[in-house]
Amino acid sequence: MSNSSHGTSAEDVITIIGVPLAVLGVLPILYNTLATLAALSKIKRMLRHGKLTALTRSDIINRVIEVELPRYAVQPWDRFDHREAYWQISRQPSMIPGGSWTTFNWKTNTIGIKTQRVEYADQLRQPQVEVEFHELVAYLLDLGAVPDAHGLRLLRSTGLWTPTGCSLMKSPDGAHVALAVAPLEDSDGHLSLKVAWEPSWTTRDASTLPPYWVRLPPPPDKKPEEESPSSSQEGAQSEETSDVENTEEPDKKESSPKESLDSIQKHAERNAKMPITCQFSVDGLQSALNQDEGPILASTFDVHSLHVEHLRINSLKMNGKWFASAATAYGTTSQTVLWNYKIPDTILAFAKCDTVPCGVLEILGIVDSSTTPQWETKYNDSMEYHEAFVRRSQEQRLAMAAEARMDPTQRQLAVQRRREHETMQNLNEMRDRSIRDNQRREMRRHEALQSPKWDNKLVAEHNLNWLRQRKIIDDELALRDIVGILLHRMVLDGEFASAICEMLDVWKAWADNGGMRSADLDILQSRFEVFAQASLLVSLVKDATTAHEGTLSVDLQECLRMWRVVRLG
Image 1 (cartoon, one colour):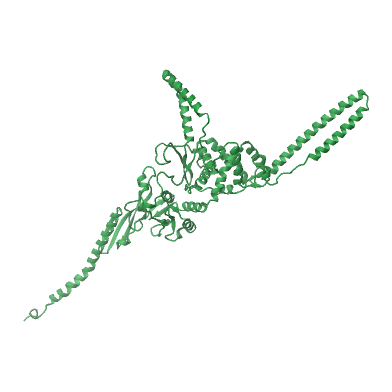
Image 2 (spheres, rainbow, N blue to C red; image 1 turned 180 degrees about the vertical axis):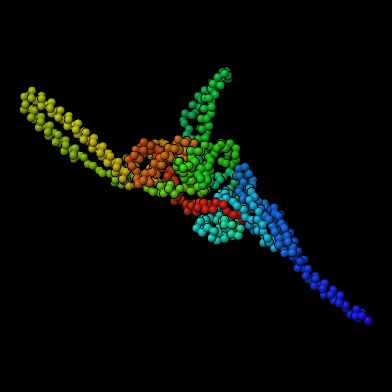
């Protein structure tokens, strides 16, 4: 019998052993295929949940999945035109690592594609987006986030070496981190950040003033006592004019220029009675708006843009820097967060130093001598006047005694000579006294210029009292409110703004050149009201430098300056 009838053949042996071995060889391929398809399915599900458009490819043999995700540059939506998208956070934020930026609704622009090769779904990373740092900070501040002073100070000092997870901004209650430093895996040399936000953290709305904006109040209304008679007369006149206009139709064309002038004047008067909101950037004043009614900046209805070219920063004049610095000080010391414009160091140093001699204020009649230290030479001329009077009286008595012993003709001639001598003597004394007074006056001016210099805040307090005594400003207004009104007027009145800034230029010039000169004193004497108003602006700038927010604002400004564009994910 053959071997096949008594046992297993060679082919059977090969089949029994080879088939399992072949199956075992295919199993890794099957496993890789199944694992790759499962990971690909999970990745697609994650992409759908995050509403991300991506191109995926898979290599089941090598167990590799390629994902091409777009990289975006983002910025917040317009606060006024897209209010719903601006204030509401995303309903389905991405859960993929690196996608914390999808917490908010952004205006996106594709700037490239990032290809990733992953084996597992957990390895997928969403590309970080590029965003202007100042826009990101402004957006979070507008929602209600609070800057973290410690984190910003650490970021300013250490830069890219700032520890991962360092908090830069917190929720309004300070209990949660809203903006923190992220790992540098996808930063390409940029500062890497991550964000977190909850709907309950939003404490502001469209009616609040945006960051980097400041509201300038109008001057208070002064209602005259005789308002009712004048208004009645104006009403009668308006009725008469209306009757005349109805009866004289041909005269309308002739009166149109006058009507246009009246409309311009009424428009200017209306602007002077409404608050002005100014927008600032790192380059100073950007725009100024006023609104007729309703919450300020709550909508774009009846919002008018004002002419601000005379207050923009340029290389020819300091007007823009003076206004931006004063407005920044006015905004920083209030509830408004106005930290993107940095007051120049030269203006800060000028506001801090003592520049105005106290003797000058006494000469101008601003302060009394009892409030200033001894700075001028005191003269006591009473004894000299007494001796001169006694000497003249004695000479006159002797001359009159000698005249009494003369005959009438000689006496008349002697009396005439004596009177001419006395007249000439009086004229000489008057001339000498005038020369001496002028010399003493010049000496007093010189000593006043060399007198001890007072702090700018103390100078502003005395100038404020002087302005109140002359009813130039309201007695009930505080210093900060007065500065707001002055800034309001500077926006509307270019001539007034130029006068204030020119005085500040003169003031800063003598401070930089070692002290006030006689010509500077002449300018103050002729334009002291302008100087008094300018000193209020300088005082507020000094208060801003010593305010509690001073260190935080400087740290934030430096961080915004160093990191223009950051990666957010």
